[in-house]
Image 1 (spheres, rainbow, N blue to C red):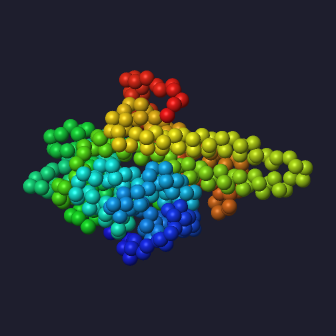
Image 2: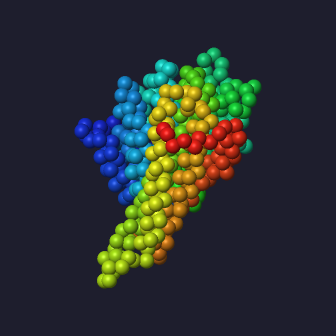
Length: 402
């Protein structure tokens, strides 16, 4: 059952406050509880309550459905802002926005999904995802389970090895084969609200090195409902045209924010050391700090370029489904997941024992463990293999144009 109060969700933010101003208030809450969330491996309930209170869960929903119509760049910036306070909170917010993007891009043609978008915005509902499954691992483009539809109703049983914050979400978007006789790659995606006919029984406990607050337990999921809850487009199109790009962009924004906070801590350490220098020389960590800044700038440049490419392609299904676009977005995930860890490790070298210890202003242990998840979420080897297949069928674009 969702432990967050619907009363809190209904409380409006100040009318004139921008999303960035509202997120600053949420980030302050997340920073206050971030260490405890990590240490206890618990859901960041305080942060999610603040996100609902500040009405930041529905802001990507178009205004005609009660949202604020924020674009990719603005949402990514909010995620990065939150990630500087708490990586787990930001990853939950990122995954929610990934699921919201499926409604925005693929739900407008369905009355049921339009109505649910209005609910997301009005009630500040938190969306989760059940795409992984026992027997397929992280290969979200294949399913073993199948949905059964009869007389306008569906039934689904899924062994989901991971449903991030599944016990706390207001709805789960689950993938499955289109029918019992369909191929494993012939998939649909269905919305399963927690007020519908569904049960989720935990089968795997999330006890991990980092991103502990995402509470990504495994579940046995059973659900039934109106067949209208199934997205009208095949999941292959949803994945190619919105989910691939939004996942890699919003994950990269999360890792960028975590790395940026580690850099900020290292910069504060070097500045404090510089003030103690009596001869005007640079402290030992200054050169390392410059190296970290270069890597952080590379992350920022790659991320903003990918957002621009995605925004340019919006509305063009052929461009969104193209080999070149998929290869470029895959490259963002690989690069961001690797560079985030590099920046944090440099910050640890700069801050030394004060960075290694927990509870200091220069601690980066949580940052290090959270970014360690990046290369395995989804496995970089799997993504490189997919990209290699794409590159065999295409030419690499060597132009520097848009």
